[in-house]
Image (cartoon, rainbow, N blue to C red; front, side, top):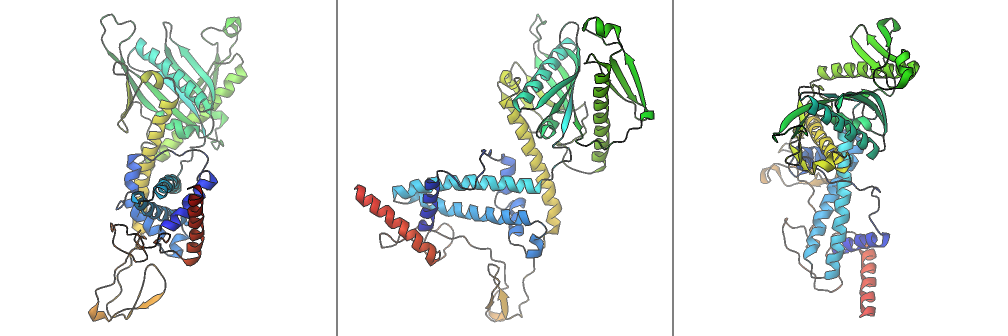
Length: 474
């Protein structure tokens, strides 16, 4: 074991990094996901079944079976390497630390691959979206908070390098924002922003408050997925298009021409307006774009309500009466009630950069957790455990090998049981129970390993080189 480890660790040091890993760093899994991957958990049982299943079972999910088998091997290798941390050789302990770091990174990557293989992606995850913010309860304070939230999402789009295009903007006469909408496009924009839909509550002392009382106000966020391919058939006869003069600032042109456009879809009553541009044609195009997104969102919600799915956090009902997040300025805290997670430094959070992205990632991981629980409960019914063979058989099969071995007479042996493949220990060729302390060989350069002769010779050569280099330096 030590020799096999030395060769792998030296390969890591010579290559200058971990081979085969992705270039971007992968974040550690959340405690909820790690709980599923823990020993004895439902996901662990499912992966062990996939890794040890027959060929016809693996053919259904070939990628998952291969990754699950590799994950189990890497975890076994990590447990073996951890035994070397208590070795007397200091150089060996340093190499063990490097090898453990390499194994942990590879295990994290494999877990992310398993999640991506098991969790089904939504139809609209890669689509663009339309963001709508509206002031709720709280009067002027709610309008001020709505304006701050709209700016936060605009900065978050710039942080993610997305395209942000305002569609509507209705400011308040005394400051703040009544309603606004924007089109956001980019890589996996809806996949990140779909968790923001709902009611956002703010608790703080307004600037106009003289007695220092804390007021509670709300605003609502709507996230409308924009289909990549417009597959909605809208009959022009079902549309009523009205034009009017735009309100607000804009000079004489917008006050003398009918540039604002209002489109009503008569069968559903959905209304779409746009007066952002000076041209009526551009406003009409944007209004139709919003109408398509609203009708598509309605159809998506109808399909979601028909499915009895537990993944409410990903799509949900987008009900405006559901409070999802609280911004508490006196306590400098933002709390997401769906996952019961709080972050501090609210001023930095409102800048729409790292802290907001951290909370979005936590929501995505919790959504993956709920999806994995649903997948395991559904796929668990497909798992079949073979019963033990009858006692009157004179032969039995070893699970670790397809070869047939001769067994003892049925009367003198207990019923056959599935014996999982034991991990290699650090105690030599003989397999011993878990927890057995490491024993060193009598010879100086020999190592305890259950591996084959060819690999043993290659490792022995490398160990000899290390010994000669050490003697030359000494």
